[in-house]
Length: 289
Image (cartoon, rainbow, N blue to C red; front, side, top):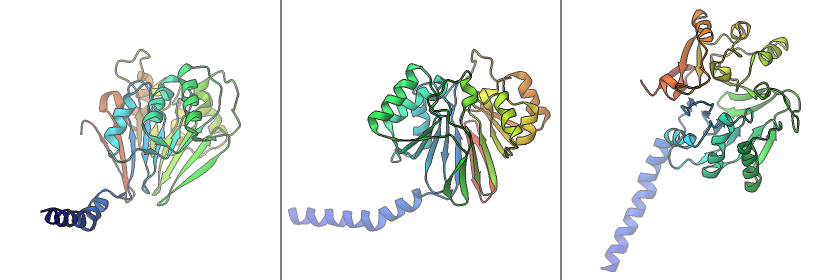
């Protein structure tokens, strides 16, 4: 009896290794498709880049633990790794959720500016990073990360050291990223306001992007006409919470996008917005469609 059970067990192991496993790995291997998920985390920012080669890049984490629900919806259960975590700036609606991510996921590397801020959540985030001995990279100059498959992520700002610096307006210390892949481009602006927009324009920074993550949740402090003309996006994503107390997005700014023929998606109305890029074709999906 024992011999029969032993043979049956060996048979099932053989089937799993040589039949089931290859099918599983084929079905769930990276599909060479770029996906960017603008997560519906309420009044805050959180964007997940799933690179064609398989890397997961998380830009900001929103105001609370809802980020964990969003990540569980966008990543398979066996993928518990964030290859790069980027904190654009240390306001609570960007950093607080990252604390829960650090506790739940394996984070390989973190990029931030090093700007000073006394928010308890920001200080908790820094403490947890130190306890976990995670490598940190200061963004203080323009640089580029190769993501393979003709994709790379650029850091356009800051272009000077902000480490241990006090900044009067943290929004304008935001990390600004540009993702280029298959001749399509995506601009991530954090909470960048008009002052920083003008600074980048005066430097003649190449801001053109097919998809724009709108600065500061669609506030009237951002998205100047000159800036939008330079970016000239086809689509704009506003990450914003329902019925928020800041009245974001601003109606005048929405009219500006409409006048310029830019298609808007909003997480408060559309839920998580997923941008897919395959064979140089952009597709946008949301929780309603």
